[in-house]
Image (cartoon, rainbow, N blue to C red; front, side, top):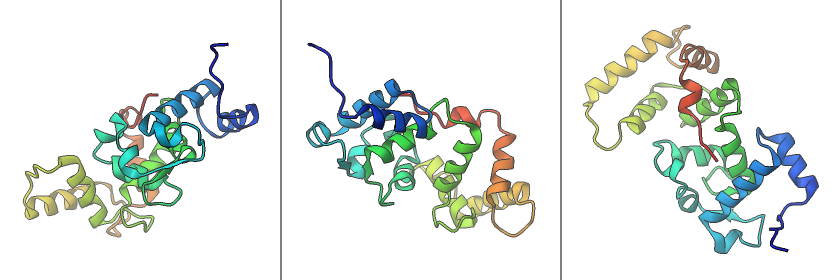
Length: 185
């Protein structure tokens, strides 16, 4: 008595542990976080799907300038609405246990707003705009110069877009990259 029962079978917990960077206990903690976003919906339905606005109530996502985009990338329906498995994948990738190359791959997808598997001028502009927020201190010319400077520095093949390998090269040179993309359970 007094012990909480899990909505997941032992086999499901084993699968989640095998497919993520989490222990079984951390999977359950992640589920509690997910459930806290909409207890009325998730309470007895482990297959519930939460609307983007509910998922963005998670403080770590609400404070992140890429929170909405993160949800879209991890959403199996790609609209930002998340099942628990979508949420678990996102939490796992941004956990401290996920390797840098896995984080880099997903951050690249988050920054690839147009979904063409390259970071073009439009993608980089959107990244900058997300980072600087609504108090945009850049005029159009400043923004163009900044984007041009970025491409000058990291577009090694001069094709006007950053491939994943070019992006990964940049993240490899940034020792704090892994720390910048962490969400604690």
